[in-house]
Image 1 (cartoon, rainbow, N blue to C red):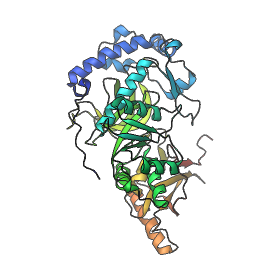
Image 2 (image 1 turned 90 degrees about the horizontal axis):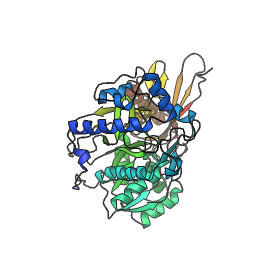
Image 3 (image 1 turned 180 degrees about the horizontal axis):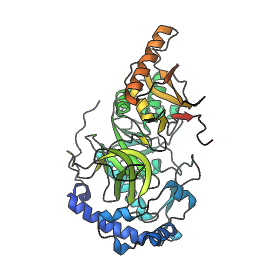
Image 4 (image 1 turned 135 degrees about the vertical axis):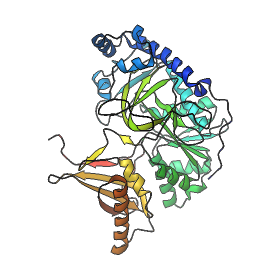
Length: 440
C-alpha cells in the first residue's frame, strides 16, 4: 500500500476556524437561510404555527425551534414545492433514485453548483488528489448526484476526469490497465466487484496503478476498507452526502482516516435519538439531521437523513477544527428488529470480513413463518474454499454464525453459496430481502 502524508495545501480558512468563530458564522448563515425559506409554502405554514420569524433566531440554540423536514415532505411537495428561488434561476435538477417511492427532486442554482464543486474538492484534496492525477469515476451519471458532484470536484482541483459511469465492468478493467488512472471513485461494493471481476478474468487487481480511492453512497465497514485497500493496493477514503442536502461533499475524510469532516460552514449537523428526537451525547450514535446554510435553490431546515452515525467535536491532527462524523452504521429505516434485537446490515458485513474464507458478498433474508422472525444470511465463499466436503463447509458456517452472534447478539441461519452466485450491483448494493408482512 502506498505511503500517504497529510496534504500540504493551505486549508480553507473555514476548515480551521476556532469553534466560537465557526458558531458565529453558522448563526449568521442560519438567520439568512430562515429568511430565505420564509416564503416556501411548507416552511411558511410551519413558521406560522410556531410563531417563528427570522428575527427570533438569536442563537444556535434556537435551531431546535425550527421544524424538521423529511423525505416524505419532499415527496408530498413534488416536484419542486420547496423551491426558494424563481424557476428561471435553476441551473440543474438532480434527485434520488426513487426506489422507495416518488423521486425526491432537488434544484441547484449556478452558485449552488459552485459551492458543490468546492465542497467535493475539499475532501478529494484531503484524500490525496493532485492536479496531475487522472480520476476514474465509476459512479452513475444522470439524475443521481454522485457522478456529477465528484466530477465537478475533480475539475475544481484541476485533475483530469475519466467519466466512465457505472456498469460494463470489462471496460472498466480495460481502461484501468490502459489509461493508468491514479484515483478510483465509486461505491465500495463496486470497488470489490471490480477486483473480483478482474481476478476472475486473469488480471491481478493489485497491479492496477491506482493510488487512492474515494468511496461513498452506501454504508461500509472498516473491515471492508481494509479489504478494498488490500485488493486494489490503494488508500481508501470515505465520504458522505445525500441528494436532498447537496449530494457528495457534505463530509469526507482527511489523510488521517479518522472520521469524516463535516463542512460546517455550509451545514449544521445534529445527532438525535431517532425516537425521542433529543440530542445524544458526543461520540454516541444517533440520527444525523442537517440544516443547509448556503444552499440557494432548495435550502432545507433540519433534514432527517435516517442515517445513524456519531459525532466527534475534537480538533483533528490534520489541522481542521470541523466536527467529524463516524462512518454511517446504518439507516434507522433499514434497521432490522429481530426478536427484539436491532440489527444493521453493516454488522453482518463486519462479521463476515473477520472470518477467513468468507467474502463481503452476502444477502440477508428475513422471514416470519409463524410468530417468530427467522433470519438467514447467504454468504459467498472464496473460490479456493468452496468444497463438497460437508465437514469443511460446516466448520465455516459455524465460524460465521459465531462471529455474527458475537457482534449482533442473535443466531442466524448461514447458507454458503458458490463464488459469483449473489447478484452484483453496479451502484448501491442490495443487502436485505424482508419477506415479513409487517403491515398486515
